[in-house]
Amino acid sequence: MRIAPKDTTLGAVGIPAGSTVLLLWGAANRDASVFERPDEIDLQRQVPRRHVAFGRGIHHCVGAPLARIEARIVLTVLLELTRSITLDHEHRPLWANSLMVRRHERLSVRLVAR
Image (cartoon, rainbow, N blue to C red; front, side, top):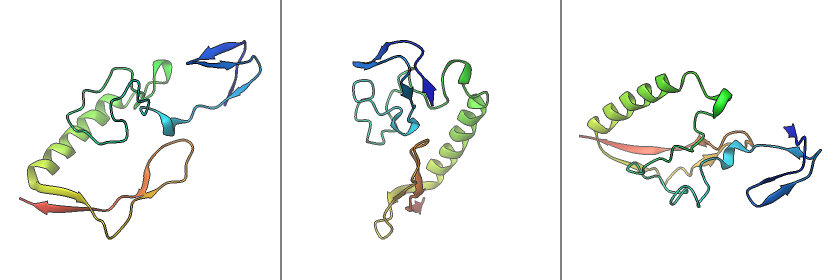
């Protein structure tokens, strides 16, 4: 949480000086005016440079380049070895109860090998 030091506007919302402001990471990268179809997984989507997946500015994650390399390697191998990936409809996705990060507690999938 932060306290607004002076009157300011964020988007179209006025924030008076002294107001408590809380950044909800769970809403990050979901602005439909910036991200086309933010509720859909689209592996071909061109990601805008304004996303906050690894933070921003002085809070940018120093491990971001390594995380990107790791993700590319894991996903490449997974996709090379898998013919199809679908949600397991017998086990519903379960969202984690968190204000900080939007993530699944459980997301069951079915993999069919090549």
